[in-house]
Length: 172
Image 1 (cartoon, rainbow, N blue to C red):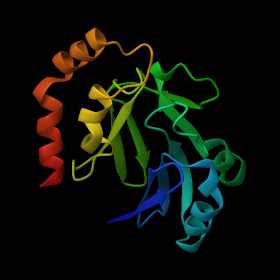
Image 2 (image 1 turned 90 degrees about the vertical axis):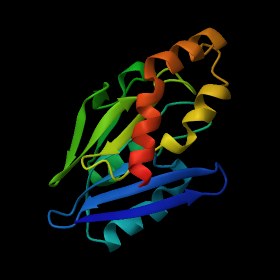
Image 3 (image 1 turned 180 degrees about the vertical axis):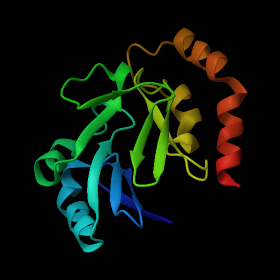
């Protein structure tokens, strides 16, 4: 059984996701927001969870991560996309990698667009996927100076319908 909580930071308009294995109590937190670390830590404690990792979907000025705060407080590992170019992570994730928590895992999908290092996390049973609903925005509205129109077209060609089909499967 899975514990799932969607959290929101109104200041940055960022959604964070807490997922945990009900039996082992191991949890991951996707896109933790720096300003919400106290709130999120309180929820983790209230639910009696052990945070094993924080995962970022991207590293960029519009998303100030709270991952290092959780590493200090909970001893959790910091994981992010290998193509992000960021330093300081405990684990750099590539397309196809898996992040285990209890009897569950998230599979990493490279979804560059908003930044070249963007990743999407898909549940082992494909029932949940983070960031698939903003796939079109990432490709169409990038403010990353490296994500030229030509680059975005190449990403659409490479990712193609497969990613959109996966998003439809996750929603059903």
